[in-house]
Length: 295
Image 1: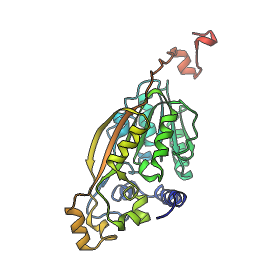
Image 2: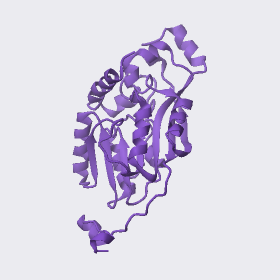
Image 3: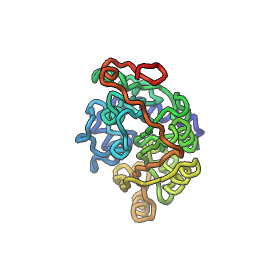
């Protein structure tokens, strides 16, 4: 098995190529990383098209859920999106947090950052920014975010526990996250586990559902809830690249399951109330606080 840095480079290189692929090709494969299936479309992704704030140019078809739909984002919140890609979830989050709030997207693929920034400029959003960096070592200070979202990204990071620790660090006391991700019930065949393409395809890097939820609990998060769960079925024309016909038959009738789950959890502590800005201050982009004497 490759080490953490080698796995990261596989994902970085693959997602640089995925950024240039069409949405249809990405949605008909496993997170855009495997050969597209000619039998099944939208293998993992959910449909964003009716979601407020959705931008088609920012939707690369790489997600496995709709975390922003469940994230309980309020006006004025600071939201961080982990693995922000071309910015789709950030723009949906921006619709919820409004001009009063702020959205930060983090991604470690430079071409994705460029695409996301171009989309934000096209929309004229001054309160959405994109930072290049690893989500297991976020370029963000402590206690910044009210809400963290992520769509099918943690499974791509070798050290998931470190990401969960970073989420806890970056959230404000009383903040929460809503994350869509791929998890397993039972073991994958070795051929799928060892294949780099399937790792970048969000499947081989997934861990057991019980372990995933356990790591969240161990970090001290509270009120852990599965907001949505759906099975992921890999078409036989994709599986045939890795498994024999006999192995495919055994895999399909076995107890192994691949699932997309959307998990919600809260950081302990009391959420502080946000100072309300006057309309003129919001429109001008200036901030106001009791300490400055303007409120």
